[in-house]
Image (cartoon, rainbow, N blue to C red):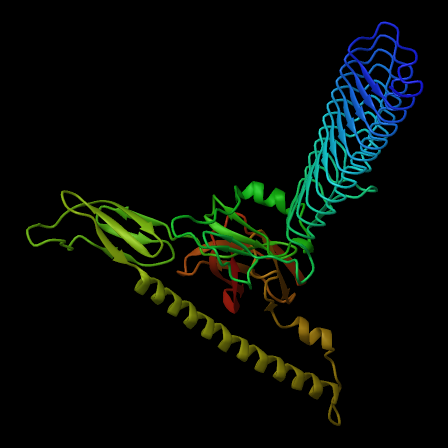
Length: 481
């Protein structure tokens, strides 16, 4: 019905053409409904199509099972099938794309060959042309690529397998798409691959995340409020941690990992790993003698843990934090708080440090005396001549410097000065209990340095001393983590 409506139809059946030139070129296509000027104009063999609106589906030739409703809806579709375009100019440029659903004025406007797309909202998916399996919901939702999802007013997703949720949330740009990225929250923006961004960068769009609470602390980025769960830090072996550190720099300062071999939390300081917690002391139980690494030994053979028991043999001991559990043959286990013992160790360390400080003071006094001597030598009295130079004075004194870096967990350098008059020079390293750990001869004379490999040293405090011709020259402290 209408001028030139269905003019070329030959064998097509069950068609309804209403409007000037509607279904103009249809030949054998059947079960079509074209309503509007030039609606379905070029359809030839396409079947089961419903085109309602001015120029709706006007370029369709063989496409079937399409529903185009609105002015110029699906106007360029030629062979695409099973499409639903509702709204003026919806799916305007689609040619062969199929299984698409575009709802809203100009929704999916530039889609040409993309398939399995769902765009809902004014200009939703407007820029997508070949991307497939997209979901865009919201006013001007800009979705392009394969398998992205965008929900929210003016949301943008440019990148494969990415998600943006929230008003003006954005993933990627036309110049630099972001793949496998997620942006959650109004104004959230992800300009990276394989990342999750929560909240925006502006004052009003920043958020605090809470788990196990309805009111996270506004001064925190993340509050973990559950009382039956903990935070499990990334766990690595020492070798894995060291290899990981090769790829880190100053931007990663503050990063935490857990060393499963040393049983310590490690923090990256921008150039090296630092220790965040001491290693658990090692226990050794030999018959009834209990000893602790870095501490004392205790004879526990006389302990009784209930009135009816005799002296019991000890079968084992475990340490949990600062609490020692002692397993007793034929009796209940007992727990001992080791805090007093460890406090005593710390007191000994403090005393040793005081002694070192006193030695440092004496060294400073000695240096001052040397300065005075140099001044006297440089100004001889009548009838005398100055026969000593400054280098000769310095060279005549054996010294050892503070190791660097200190503390360290990998290795450290110790500088020294040994006069040529010294016949024998040695460096001795002792642990905190005064036990000799390592001893090395120094054969070079004058200024030099020693590289000390600390990888096999247990974490703790050590003393190193310089001996010349059997006499102690100086002692300093170093810390290994």
